Length: 228
Image 1 (cartoon, rainbow, N blue to C red):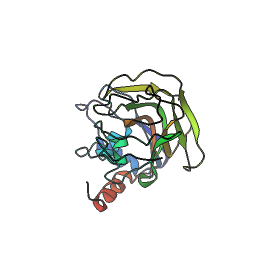
Image 2: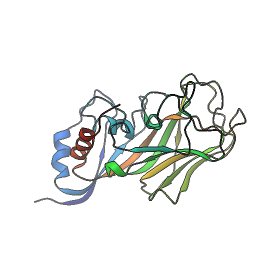
Image 3: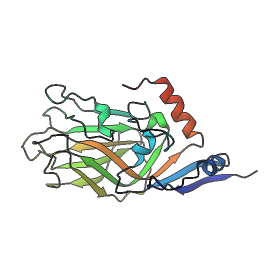
Image 4: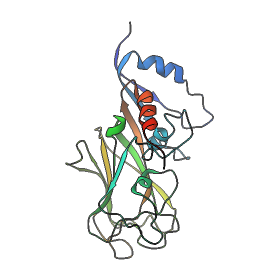
């Protein structure tokens, strides 16, 4: 009988690559923790995409809609073009969501439902679909283990990366710890001198720590949630 404390597996991002799921299933039976390394790729298919496809075994559905993660926000505007729910913060497609014009606005994602921990090496966000105002300039990526005590992983000050709607940028990270909660925190004004936080398509890349029965757990969660 074999046993391992943990093992790291590099997940291929190329959709044409051979991914030996039966081998991984066999390894899962022999270990206490599985660590996957999901690296940044041109397709921008990171950890939330991997969750949304049930570890790349099914068609993509937003992982927040499936109940795998929980998205929250400091506030949410639901008028005019802003018709989408907060779950679209982690969707694969650019949505139209933004907070109210309030200082210290944020969008967050909680990994507790899927029993995962992430040590991020890179992240990406996008401006809104058809956005033409309030591009983010002063924000930071924060992480937490309990959802209460936050640490800053990367701070952006007067960062003019975003100038168009539906524009995606990725940023490298230096992080040596695993976390369960992540959020984009807007600590300063936008280019339109407001406090609206207008970001979507949040994605993470890096090391993922999960239990051996993770795929079965995901399918069980999805079965209990009716996609919107």
